[in-house]
Length: 206
Image (cartoon, rainbow, N blue to C red; front, top):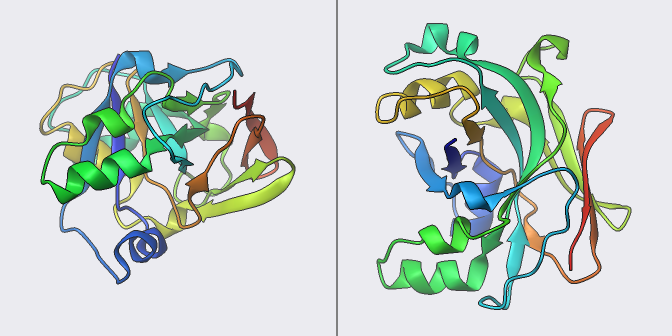
């Protein structure tokens, strides 16, 4: 199983990080180790190598068939389910690595950094994958909201682009990018991820 992440895929989040509008010509793709996967409501343990670990709430799609060099017009055939996920980021570590021009895989791909909720069939989305609202609550308060219509690169475009470089296999996951509103988590926080009115993700931080 491969886990793909997408950076800089919402305009307002790009402004949040860069201080100005920044749109990439091609999707910004990175990978996470399979040990990053956090499922079934298991707790997230804050790593000891960071002083600020940020949540990034995202839609995650699940690949359902083998594919390579997939045309955009056929990309919708290659994923069958969606959920809410958290792309945890060791933000201080990322900033130090970026300042030195170094790869920042370790700040995104560490153990437990890819939390995902229960799967919902894409066929149950009334407006399709590009008309989905999602949000994250921490300790009962909404801290981040997103709408998939605001993506710079659509889900189908991400699937097609990634498949140019990697063979997609059944069970691979694509984190599709986070909207504005990222922030740190703390010990004893409780996180709930919602897709429309369905709570698909729920776990504690320890």
